[in-house]
Image (spheres, rainbow, N blue to C red):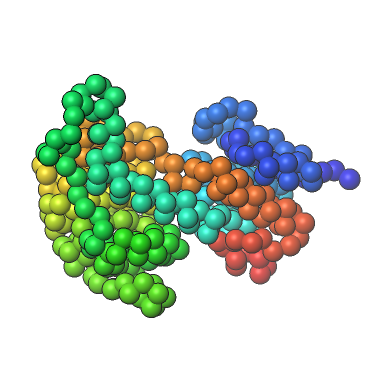
Length: 326
């Protein structure tokens, strides 16, 4: 009996690949980089399943290149804005993602950025390494307090809730906004649901945890920065285009806000000119889920989804369940 074929668009932790290789013929992108469009279209040809990444643009052209026998595109991410889900559904292709497993790692990274910006850790590290430290001084690299301050969370979903839960250790007042209230967050954490404008005006720290869609693109821009406190710190570990990066650079340069911590960028991997030079911005290369445990578990979920679908079973995390009802 001919084994089914799976294509993996970039190397992932070996444990997940081993699960797939036990059951299928697996081909993996041999390069440690994002595939070109031509390489992607060629790679998926004749495959029964594709394990893709957020950096892959998956649309009708890719589905057509894969062929009518292809049953699933398993996205190695919680987000799936890189995939034309409607087109997949139309062609009867299952799309899955890897939610929940990233919650702690992403929330932890958001906190790491919050601390790094507030206490000027990257700037201080560079200062010390450059041999500029000449001894303690009362005005040396002053940062901002965190304990007891007001935390604003945009998007009270899985990661936003997780992030808020960790704030209780710092005795913070929690404000949040989103499409609807989160009763569990209010009951467990005493969080207060407010409108966007109120949150922007009152919060000392603002952390963004929303998916990217037409309604959230440039959710934070020039108008929003003008509403924030001059002492405010913005953290974004969601998706780059949620923040207008040009407006952010100007807000940071002018002192309209105190600082920003970014894991994602509007035009990745490109970073808005001027941002890199700013000491009040801490920027890291999209590493929110980059722990050994989390990245391995993401791969294992994606692999299990592929195994189940190719064996005629229900996947664990399907984003277009209507396909399964056919």
